[in-house]
Length: 505
Image (tube, rainbow, N blue to C red):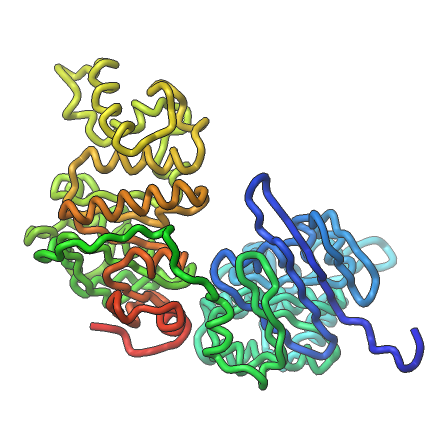
């Protein structure tokens, strides 16, 4: 390299692509991380950030594109190779050995030995002490990791990275579970690492933190690179606009429905450490969306309302009748239904037939003297298979062999067979093709038109904006905004999801 040539980047990815079967996780991703810098990587849920990180960390291998480390082309086939090359990933929830001490966790698997081949505990402790002294952090080196705060566990992972002389550190949502004081301490450590000449990738949905810590920011959307700017050259509104960047299309055939009386009323429910002071209502004919970022507490709220999970205080009523806590059977009897986020693990018995799955929720109605005939089972299932256009020629087809879209329809049919008054549906179109998405959206609109109340949880902003009559934005376990359909925009929802504001009461 000539004296006038620019120094190679600490890490550079150009046009990186990765697919999992027919699902394109990354179409064309770029990222250039300089030494002595903190580089923010932002994007909506599903933008491809996690896939990109896993390629850098050696968990995945790219299908196409260039991957350079300090100017040299690399292609890791394991996490061990990535670590050996000087790359460390600090996750939101570190995985330490709880019974081992702080020092032992730092040097696990590579303990220094003395001339007799015994572990040199004095040398380990001395090096650990030097590392924490450099970081200006006090840590009891002999304390077991069990019981340590998430913040302290992350610092142990950082100390481990320094002991390995990692030159590239990726911090993936590191502040999600930290207090303000802990965040300040982590940021001080990050800045000291940058000043030592390391490059840091900082992934966060919290824009106040991104703008406070980062030197540069890259935006991704739908698995593609969108832009890179110096943090001083852009505003939060510009970044949000680039992250969203989509229009509502005919994918969302939302029809106007008559909004009637309140069906579901949730008053001030709280669950310690999960969500707090959550209040909202769902009316007849209304689709209410719970929007927000992954980890905000949306699914946990829905599960508590239905009774899958408990809650500490507050009340849930349906049609004016109290819904008992932690009692899904009672909730179903009163007219609640829940289509869960993970249809394969929580919504279906994959080894059972379509007919068996579609009638699971009404088996007591179908039984005669404790027995259920195949004829009764098939007759009940055929009603919903026909209505939902399940693409299966026979009701005895195993649910596990259906496409994702048809599996979702079977789960919907199972719950609609209970004739609910309020349907809670978590991620209604995750992992299904565009055509089937439109069918599911059309069905939800039709159900609302028939007077059902629908509570929809979705991580897809276009889906939220296209289908909801009202949007409730959840941030860190609280409802921070309630936005009417006419006022809901991608920017307003994303702003409420990423900014601390007074909760709506």
